[in-house]
Image (cartoon, rainbow, N blue to C red; front, side):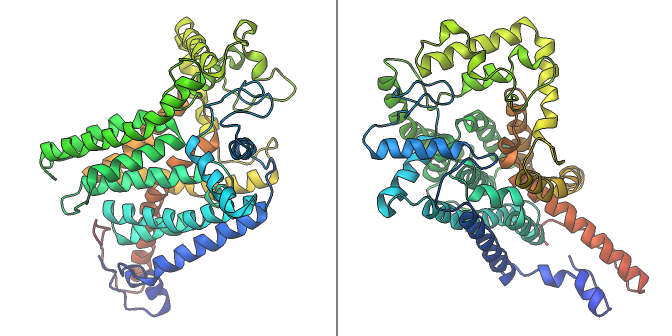
Length: 458
């Protein structure tokens, strides 16, 4: 699609030529900008590990890493979150991310800054590139470029790219999974070693954030539907790919399941012990009908909400017991659970500044989701009504399913970030639509109006 404008500077500004060259230098510029901003964030956080706003988990990962390096394994150094006693084993934290820090500290010594810089550079390169690929495949090249640009400057992604937490690698892994799925569901995109690649991507994502396992059946159902309905590739071939992916996923998860079985004296824990804790605390009667994302310091602590008779259990036993209690809350009052889940929307999609948040949190919130959510919503609706395709369906499914998982359990803003990474693509759709409409109005005013709707593949 082209806007045929016969004006000078204003017309050229709105023309498609500036954004219409696949593989152009624009993507390189965007990636360089993304890397620079994230490297600056890494230096800002520095060569130490402290409790910055929204990043307390990095203290836990740092502690765990040092314990592993000192030969004490995956145990906690003191009484630790969520409710693990000093010296006892834990499975609450991502093994994969801990091993990343172990590798960095082993190679370069205790320098958290190096770990920050490595993941900042990886995030700066991979997240805009993957978003560009998905935007280009699903909509068109220009949407992909705009989405990549938004990813580069999105404040939340810059901030968390330097934090020693799973967020950045988890987002990269999820984008990788969805990009591979898009290739598998495409008519023209061959994928070598499809099953191995998909299985590896799924395993890495699950080992970083096990909640992603809930989405895998939806992903597989979409791939089979695409294969059957649109005949992108033979159904038997697709089934073979998915079976291979499942085998790879199992092979990479089983060692950690076996470790948990030994560490917790015969208790089964698939990957991590956080489902029960999150569901129990997220649905405790203390919330009433209005979810409290973080309990105030003046009130009861999370550990104080644990029944005294359960406090002698190990972490795995406690996680299972709390899940049972949390499900009992739901069974006792399903109406409250539904209203409480709906109330989590305000915490999950919060975009306004808050007096309870520190300055950097408010700035990150306002200058990322706060600015873009109108475009995300408009693009989400516009993409469905006007530019919907079977390839776009998987993006919609991820946004909806991943959001519902957290609305029905525990909602925090940083849990929404993988959804933001996909919504940025829809924001790209909206921005391009607005850009084209402005160009059409300007060219009409100049007497050279050519109506040209945005089309996939342009």
